Amino acid sequence: MGTKRTPRSPRQKYGEELRLRRIAAGLTQEALSEQVVCSPTLISHWEAGRRLPKPDDAQRIDRALGTDGFFVRWLEDLDTVFARYFATVADLESEATEIRLYGAALIPGLLQTSAYSRAVFRAYRPNYTAEELDEFVVSRGRRGLMLDRPHVPTAWVLLDEAALRRRIGGPAVMAEQLHKIADMTEAGRLRMHVLPLAAGAHALLEGMIYLLTFADGAPLAYTEGLHTGNLMDDPALVTACHTSYILALSNAASLDESVAMVRAIAKEHESCSTPGTSSSTAPR
Image 1: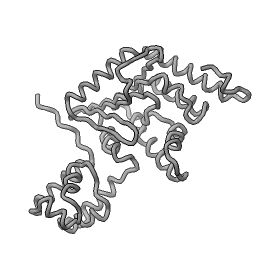
Image 2: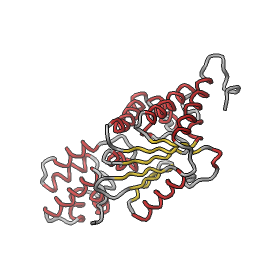
Image 3: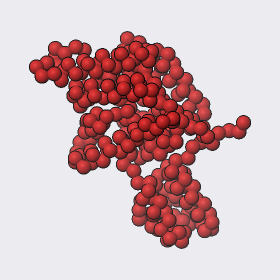
Image 4: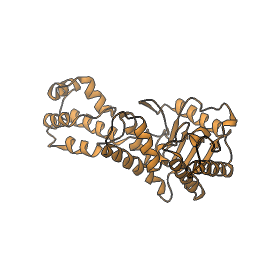
């Protein structure tokens, strides 16, 4: 069997087309950079799919290569509200046949309700408008629609108990969020396991992980920190990430126990949203 190719995102396809058109025009990266008025390094980033040109850069590319607005029009289709470091992952996840998520302090974005994601976005943006929040929430919700497809992808989620108890958006929002996850699990759309706090140390303590498997491409792993993300395609690193996930999964509760735990914690949140019940006396 041959080696599986690394899946290419739309950004990478854009960059590859730019490289091919540049070579066909008989231009080096340096020569093209002079006409686009940028550095050769930036041309290299565009061709590798690491960055996208700005609209005025794309216009100058079209003029230099004689491509009649081709790269400007394609760029409009690639416009995204996702953070730069996550955009490639957002492009690729819809092609995956299996995804494995881990939520340490947060419910993963792919599973979030609108109210939960709105509370998350509000928390880490110092200034925002209602329109901006709406755009972020709609985009995140649109990603989750792929889990409604009848056959693919197979979805696994491993949730730390801390993510279930952190009251994001208030008790009613949390109850709705947890019931959604339990409903998806019971409907067979999700394989969900909970890592109880009592489990102690586990292999994913250091942060979130997102694993993507493809039918005709090599698997990928993605990790994320504050304002940064890392998409990995190195086979050794991806294998290590899969191993860490499996190790942590071995410390988790069973599927039935996990659903029961999620439902129970949802009821705890619900009791805190009942009129006359204060958070200080609510069950923990």
